[in-house]
Length: 171
Ligand SMILES: Nc1ncnc2c1ncn2[C@@H]1O[C@H](COP(=O)(O)OP(=O)(O)OP(=O)(O)O)[C@@H](O)[C@H]1O
Ligand SMILES: O=C(O)C1=C[C@@H](O)[C@@H](O)[C@H](O)C1
View 1 (spheres, rainbow, N blue to C red):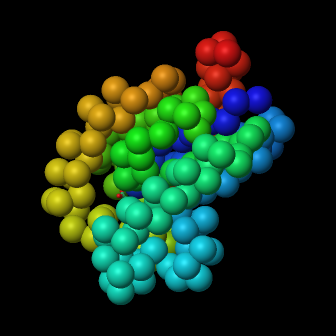
View 2 (view 1 turned 60 degrees about the vertical axis):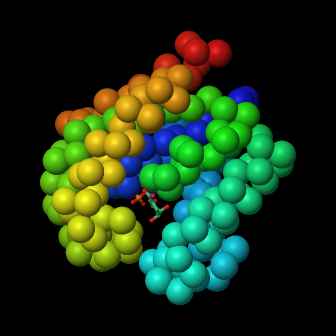
View 3 (view 1 turned 90 degrees about the vertical axis):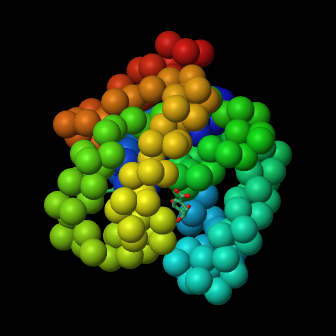
């Protein structure tokens, strides 16, 4: 099985959908943010604060190279800025989880741990800036994506099933 690379904006549901995909398939799921946190033994928020964003992007580059070389049969969910890694296509089939900015924020806020969720993503702290970032990135996400799943008003389970169907068709 070719790897699947899930891309999309922060909070669009990469983690939740990955957890559903593993229930209905033989994929193993990993997450680039989680890999980086374990590599550094530090939370992303702390890495941004203490080492800066450039350092974080270097870690993403390192992870991208490792994924390309060493990972198979895996669903890789990625941080919101991971799409910029040059070897993304070589890692696997790129699937975009797509939703309007306001729908993503509304959904995060509904979550009981919303405040913590917003806090742990440094680039989501200022919603005006986050919206700008979203608008800048969305065309780039769409350009890269081989498969697009509109996740608005769908459960994580529905999205996971649609994803598996489309990936199978895509070959
Ligand atoms: N399909 C869905 N329907 C409703 N709520 C959802 C859905 N998918 C995710 N959520 C909720 O949206 C929030 C963000 O989801 P999740 O953590 O999976 O996103 P993410 O893309 O992995 O985020 P991040 O990259 O910031 O970690 C969570 O509160 C989750 O419970
Ligand atoms: O959108 C981004 O650039 C980021 C998203 C998060 O998943 C983390 O990877 C980090 O906070 C940066």
